[in-house]
Image (cartoon, rainbow, N blue to C red; front, side, top):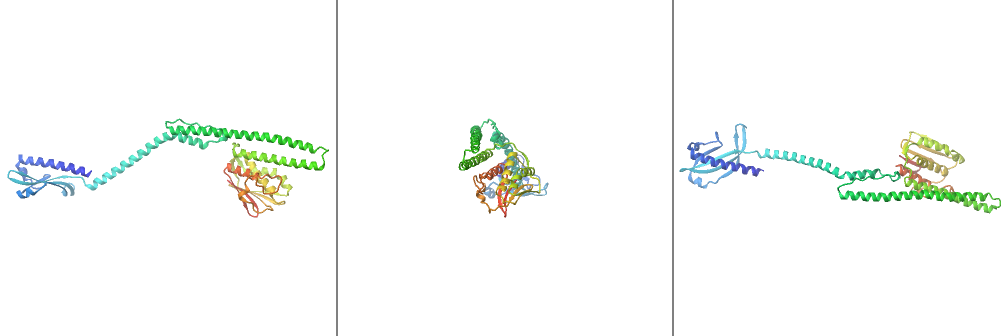
Length: 391
C-alpha cells in the first residue's frame, strides 16, 4: 500500500513540475519563488555544469507545518529545467501520510474486518450446519431415548444429503432386527416359563400322590422324596433363571419412587418367621430416608434376596443389622464362614454354602437388578459379612 501511495504522490509531483515549468514560460515572475513560504515549490538558479550532472530525485523528508506546529513528513521532488539561457533547480513538495499512523489504522481496520468475517462465518456456518445436521441430531436424540422394552419407534427425517439417508436406512434395518430378536427372546422366555413349569408341577404332584401310596416301602419312599427334592430345586432354578433373563432384557419397564424404609419394614415382617426359626433378630437402623426410582417388584426382589441371603447363611442366634442412610443401604450378618471371594461372589451358580435351598443365583439376580438401575452392589468383610447398595 505504501508503494502505491508513493507512486501516486510521485505522479502528482511530476504533473505539478510540468505545470510549474509551463507557468514559468508564461509568467517569468514565477521564477522568483525562492522559498516554500507562499507555495509548495521553490526555484533556485544553478550553473550549467550542475544542471547537466543533476538527475531527478524523489525522497521523503520533514518540513515544519504551521497548522500542525510540528514537523510533518512530506514527499519532495528535486529536478532541473532550462528557461532561456539559464538553468534552474526546482523543488516541489506534497504532504504524505505518516507511515506509523497508516500501519496502525490499517492494522486496526484489518482486525475489525477479520473479527467481522470470523463472526459472520461462525454464525453462517452454525445456521447452515444446524439445518444440514438437524436430521442427524434428531436421530441421535431418538436413539438416546430409545428403549426396546417400551416398543418405541424411530421416526427418521428425510434429508438432501445421501449419507444421512443411508444412515437412516441402516439404523431402521438394525432396529427392526433388534426389535424382532428382542420379541423372539421375550416370547421364548414366556414360552419356556409355561412349558417348563407345567410339566414340573405335574411331575411333582404325581410323585406326591405316589408317596401317599401305602404299598411303597421305606426305600422306595426315600427314592421318591429324593426325586421330589431335585424337581423342586429344578423348579426354583428355572424360576430364578427366567427372572434373571427378564431383568437383563428389561422386561420390567414400569418405574416409580421406592421408599426403602417402608420396603425393608414390610420385608422384615415377611421374613420374621424364617429368622425366628434360626433364633435370629433383624434390626433396622435409619439415619435418613432413602428413596430411588426403579421398578417396585425388582426393588422388592433386590432387598429380599439380600435379606434372605443374610438369614440363610447367618449364624444361629445372631443379629442381622440393616442400616439405611440418604444414599446407601447396608445389610450385615455374622457367619461361621470367613471373608468370601469377591471376584466370584456375584457369579451365577456360585454357592457359598451347602444349603439345599440355595441355587447360587440369588446374588447374581441382585447384581443384575442393581446394574439396571444405576446402583452399585458391593461386598465387604469386617468380622461381619456386609452387602452395600450405593445410590
